[in-house]
Image 1 (cartoon, rainbow, N blue to C red):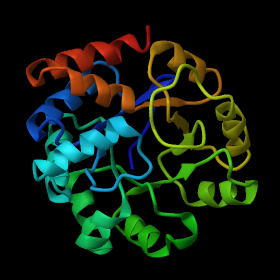
Image 2 (image 1 turned 90 degrees about the vertical axis):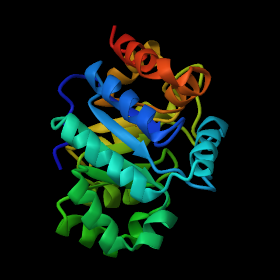
Image 3 (image 1 turned 60 degrees about the vertical axis):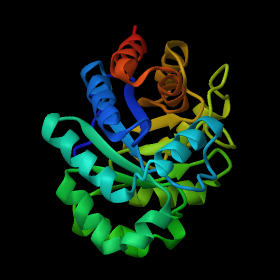
Image 4 (image 1 turned 30 degrees about the vertical axis):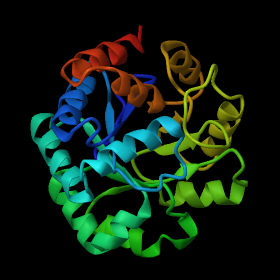
Length: 253
């Protein structure tokens, strides 16, 4: 559970594993780390990614069509941990692939792969007992989504069981790039600060250096997802790692 942000704001980079292919995802992740990403979120491709906008939906569809599965993502995580021992590494998945593998087996395999934490997008804190028990048994950090619409009682419950960092959703809706950081984000972070001393990372709609600077005024880290996936989508695979590395490096300038 060694997730930490060495600067403010920290950078969390989301990648859909296997888009365009697993080898390229590995190279992109390494380039992101080497250019300033504190944490890599490896997205497990899923056939029905309801929380995601069209960019990440398409990436998931492409990876699923290539046959990429949870076992492949765990193997990729192991490769990244070996290559970059100090980097933060989080698995980002919907619950269904984990249930298919089995919660106990999944947590054990994630720990073996060297993963620091797990975020299951549709795992709600009220139904997370088995998940939390297995995460604790394997020394993994459970990371939960906190939304602007969540009442304080729910934010308190999320904060009580979270480790690593809390993922604050900047706005209601699906993932995707936006013109500016939603006004709800700072208010949500302020509310979360009442209940936790963990770092708070803001995601959904963060897509450029201006957004990252805005987030730095009130949060500990910015999560970049759809902007990276969209860039990967339009970049030849052979150039993707270099392009993403330059993009990540430019976020902190």
